[in-house]
Image 1: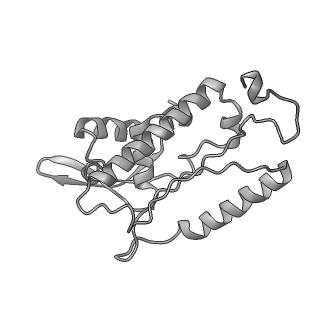
Image 2 (image 1 turned 90 degrees about the vertical axis):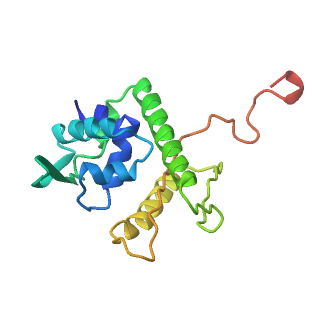
Length: 189
């Protein structure tokens, strides 16, 4: 399986998200982080990610007659690079978007189902903004967003930090610009 196929699955994407902080984890650790997913499913998808080179075995030890492996994410392999994205079809993009949304829904449900979940206190937010941008303005904004996110990605877990998922979604909405010819409300559009 190539990287695109490996990442375009909600459980595998959630495992990658759980491993992205650089910590090593066992499959048992991952099961605790994905309580809504069966152990057998987590084990199967960890195996696929390891076989595909996205998870690396960091350590092995014997535990009650079986081998327990500690995995580390191979970050360089756990991305869909520009070349792979350029080869994706429209259907691949549809599938990728559906997987991203299913992953977000699953993670949000796990959050809401935990004891003490408090969306207001935890500053939970989901917004959608329509922006009019030239290609240059869009490129500049993407650079600013990447810089803001990258400056915080190396932060280590600590008692005062909570892990947040940030999922920017960006695509052009086909709306005619102001003053452009188009359907009027009285024309049924």
